[in-house]
Length: 215
Ligand code: T5A
Image (cartoon, rainbow, N blue to C red; front, top):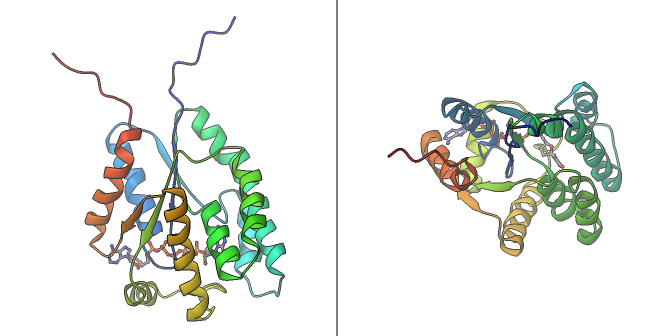
């Protein structure tokens, strides 16, 4: 009989929020900080994460017209792909996965933003994320002016960033409504990168393996 795998399962943590709140920056910082604490961690981003999903990302962020239902389903198809090819294998190896977006993005953008039926959107997302539900989701939130400034500083645009202010307000309101309904932590991401990292770490800390007590 094979001996039990002694490695603890990794944890799957998802950072969420509207455009330019600093998710990518914080994914990198949290991966590095986990590494500094002796915990293997890998970043992924959605849409994307493996060659097939990155090809799908180009389609989704490109400017071909599409129906919102098709868009929501394609985000979820690519999610299923990376859950199988990247997330589940990493977790099984004991590696933490720190993700830039997942199901809440579809609920906020395609559901609240584009007005898809929320029950349908949630059900589609749930059918995919049930493959591997996140251990923790965190929503980063900044005021509109700060987010706009950060996007301008970064200087790139894709089809979602070009959508009107009303769309982005519905997305942000959608995130906050989901947070309220599902008890998801919302972090004020208006501080410095170091301050935001510390706030995320506080929320994530209970997931860390207990250190042996030295006597
Ligand atoms: N989408 C995605 C859907 O519609 N449905 C879905 O299901 C999914 C999964 C993805 C797009 O797809 C949509 C949502 C998105 O529109 P993306 O390129 O991955 O596209 O876009 P974002 O995830 O929004 O990434 P952004 O790069 O726009 O924003 P981030 O990652 O939140 O911000 P970040 O870290 O790149 O920072 C932006 C700038 O601010 C600075 C950074 O240096 C950078 O210049 N910054 C700070 N400055 C001051 N103080 C801080 N604390 C800072 N933190 C970062």
